[in-house]
Image (cartoon, rainbow over all chains, first blue to last red; front, side):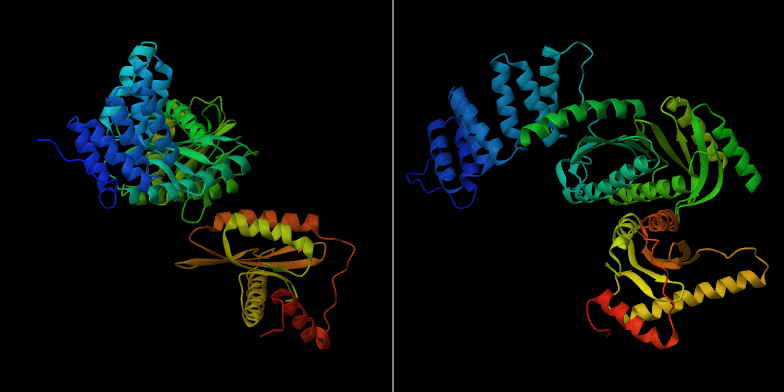
Length: 250
Length: 117
Length: 157
């Protein structure tokens, strides 16, 4: 059975065309999938997931240039679009540009820290590119969390754990910003120099805050049994990735 | 525990190389309860500022539905502020030089904080 | 924030920002208000200034009666949701009084720390060429009215 592509360019109501386009793509009806998606984009030109879908359709059609263009637009709409990051990483990996693939996957991990597909893809790319010591950096603990937030305590990306809601992550970001403000003040007034990190150890977790930029801080949350040194090391490496992500976003 | 015993434990903490001072702080009001520090360390300011940081981390734990933290460490290029829960609202706060052995210090201050209970 | 003299603005801004004070009042020892933050009614300012000066006068007398060689310095009242810091400090214009109302977002330690810095900043910033004015009884109400008008931008309510 083949799914009928709409004969009219009018897409299904709302964003339902995304589901239809994806189903068509999975069934291999690539031209129909492209038609539905393009019609939807005519109505929602700023919808990142639609550009991501179009990228996957073009990749399936082996039109890498069109796929890359679609995913680039998806990132313009939303820097945290994991699908677009994965797609661009895939194209870069296939094209032999392993550094670009790693860069895209690091950004994808920041956007979706608990997506095992992304973290294992990052591991694979690193295994192909990096010295043997390079292991999984950002997601060394699936129960952990990683989050970027700005000076005002607004969450930029990430969360505090797989079981934590976005609301909880937002609340934690707001409170962490106050910790950063107090730490900045304390290090300044006590002449301890610019702050470099805050480590908090508790019975439930070990958390660390690192300055990423003037207006952004990284929070890393790990289980209470994680060695502190490992939390710090992971935080330093995550900070590098977060800086790169911020630069691409701005 | 007596104030004299507290003082002895704080002296123990301050005797560690690289430690500028140790202060027992009431984090509810940010005031010094007992202290052992070099003259250059403004202990009242350490207490006020450390209490403010600890109070904020308590709010982070509450926001994350976790139990309160046991220790907080703020590191700058020129030194580190370390705080360990001692007894209820009382926290042991120490300020260390960058050259201090933080790993050893963390364990020792944790022990001192436990002994302060 | 309202100040009677512009040079007070910077030290007071620092105190308010760092201590997270909800309300603040700076007055001379004779009760003339020179700066305020957070009050919306002049009657409240008048009452708080009078009560604050009275509390300090009372504790100074208490110190004398119990044989304390100096005043007690600051007086702190700590309630469930907010506290009051009340302390005298010396300036080139004579002894002034500061009153700070703070909530749970701050602490006695923080208020004390930044109040001490505020007092030091005032000592540095205060022009020393002007002698403190003598407030005569007959001029007191007019002085008070003028101060409150300046602090609230209108006639006293």
